[in-house]
Image (cartoon, rainbow, N blue to C red; front, side, top):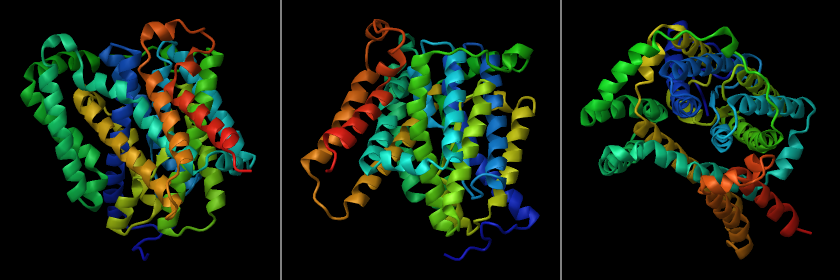
Length: 431
């Protein structure tokens, strides 16, 4: 395909900034969705939650610049990783320090794997059926979280109204995604946030009043110096859980880089994989050190590139700068934190539905007309059902598990990934 600007070409300043604003909107959407969920898990203090979003936004902005200059050097958007969200939710009974220590360790190991040229072995482990299960597991194991976000406080008498609101909101979101094209479709998450939040506060005005009261106190929050960095806390079970999650993140990273590489017809893709995964690990280690969840490269960049006919990687530099500026401008992040949890739940449900669709596409593309046999159904179906069962494990049952193995055994995603690897490479191994 012929582009107005190829990967290594620099557009005029004005167009560079204009396109960068659109890239920033895409990345910002992922920061707000995942950042607000995790910050809500860590603290009830609005000021601390906003500070978490600021950290995450700042690091994501820096990551965008690093990747396009020294990493994969492609126009690929970067944002917090859903698979690390799964790991964080599954480790809710442990301290945030233990979670971020595990992220640092996993990220460093991920960088070492890339630097040592071992990515090909990860590729052999994650076959088409394994990748299909991984993508589906991320979606299914987040169902309890999505439900909690949508219904919120069950005692306030608004559960039915919120469910109705969420249903019609999802229908409108899916319809909009179907009819919108190019830039509008690529930035749909941001429009959902803006329009959805406005409509929500019209229907639930009391929650808008509550936000105004908490928002004023949040803007006055000043973090302590010792809260800027984690205090290492080594929990073996949490580390094992995140190591498995990080293997899935590496596969996701490679897939996103490959997808944009195919569209832009970029050369030297093997080296781009290596550098991209290496710097993702470095960035995520820094994120974890400062108490923020790590990120991944997202393949949602394709729509923007095809619509604007602009494949220049340099357009992501102003996008990174915009995120950094938003993170430090007083009042910017508290305003964005006005997004209701119901809207965040709808956004996450839409993103996970898209991920489920991607999983089906990956699997059936690989079939190439071959019949769907019984073995395929077992290899894909059992790990997904197992992961889903564990995701709904009652808290009392999870608490009864030995502390050392609880983050692994009570993590539906990890259990599903381990089971599909056993099925694929041992029980149903092709001899």
